[in-house]
Image (cartoon, rainbow, N blue to C red; front, side, top):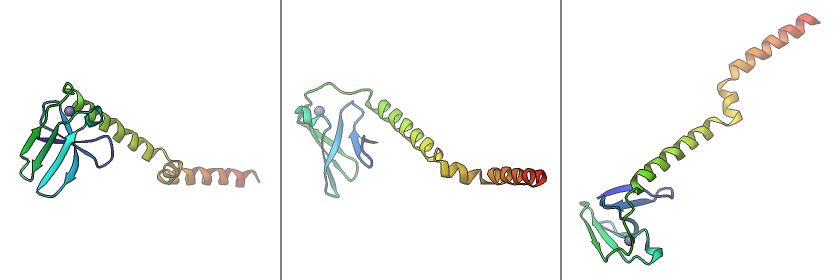
Amino acid sequence: MEVIQGTHRNSALYHAGDGYFFSVILDSGPLIYLRCVEHRKECLAKAVVNFQGYFVTYNCHNHEPDLLRVAISAERRRILNKAADLQRYATISEIFASHMYVFFHIALILFSCFAKVR
Ligand SMILES: [Zn+2]
C-alpha cells in the first residue's frame, strides 16, 4: 500500500500498485475508510487500512485500472513545484530586494554624473 498526493492540497490517494486509487472517507485513528476515486462514476469499490498499513478492498471496480496515474501525479507535482518557484522569484519587490545593491550603485553613479555636469 502506497500513498500519493491527490489533486487538492493535503489530499492523499491510497493505492496498492494495481492502478486503482482510493480517497479517504473517514480517518477514525486505528482504521482509515476509503472509497474508489471513481465513485462519481458509480464505482462501489471501497477499502480499509489499519494503522499497520494492512489494506483490504471490497466490492469490485466497474472500470479499468489507471496504470499511468502515479507517473502523471509525480509529473504534475514537479510542474506545480516549478511554477511555484518561478512565481516566488518573479515578484518585482523580491527582485528589487535581492538586487538592491545594484540599483543603489547605479543611483550613486547617476548622482555623481549629475553632480559633475552641474
Ligand atoms: Zn473503482
